[in-house]
Image (cartoon, rainbow, N blue to C red; front, side, top):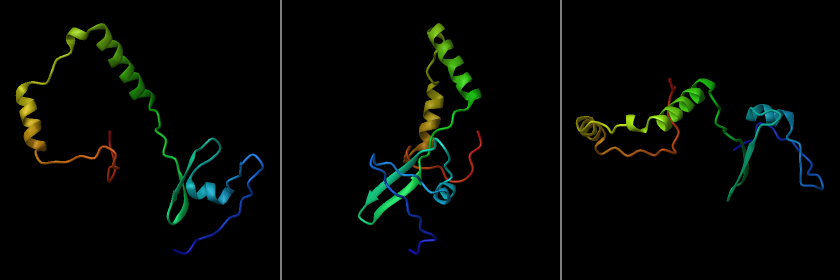
Length: 108
């Protein structure tokens, strides 16, 4: 694979280096951002660390649910047997990898 460009960075006595601006721009990281170094038999690659972003509305809703469950544990109920059967029928034979990325656009 041909490199689009190359940049050189010097490592300090403390093992630190500055990621060149052009590389930061390609990675889409800025001050405080994180990068991941991956080492394999082909060499070293650098990628942006995908960090989970917080959504204040979802965080507030989840906090509300947690408080409500704590105050009213008797209100929790299991799924109706008919719904359990329907879910089992719709998902029969399916395998799910919870760690794999979701393809396409995601609307919440």
